[in-house]
Length: 322
Figure 1: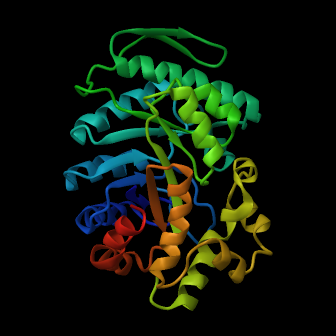
Figure 2: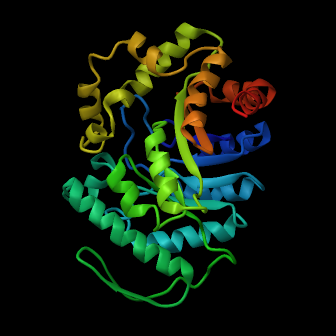
């Protein structure tokens, strides 16, 4: 399993994210993913820089680690033709190290440009967007007229030699059926073996990567780790059906107001115990995931985490999930 590091744009400013990216490569992480938000989940996180500017800078301070959006919604804030252009440019800047991760989005980030569509409409929009993006990244002129998007003689002029790989976030059988043959890789945040089996069955011999994400809160003091995780990540257990609909940080604060620190500690590895992280990661490995990006919760101890990761965590995880 490849072990990644998450550039969590909701909890760190842009200059720190670029610095963390460089340090994470030095620590030995295999890939880095960046969230693409216009709001943090909670006010206490306090950040939401523009992910594409951050990744452009990251591409210049790293030289071999893979980069990825986790994930970009190509239907509301961004037109899919613009996403294709951005992805191609980042593919060139990174020397072919970029993977475009796409998803249907959340109200939290997309409401700033207008009303949030119903879930079935969002999935239809994402399907049209993927069709447009794939066509543009394949090269040449593209015309498209769908129910939600129109593209008129579009072309991406600067393309990398190899097409930018595309992954799509799915959470159920309907999403797998819709996207398994349309893109390259599966993205999911839960270790769902049934989802992976269905994806592999539809893909056949070229099943692609299965890319997950898992929060941890490492700190030498477990009580401090639990405190940070509760302050910053207590929204995590609400589930994506809830998370996709809430319009702002106040909504996430309200939904999570009865979540206790011990509830968060039960769901997320907290503290210095590396075995707990391996145990949680093993669930993804057992489900058939090829890649998992860790989220170190909280900005205040990122440097300590990255120091420790280079010495202990990355080699320990690579051994523990092999």
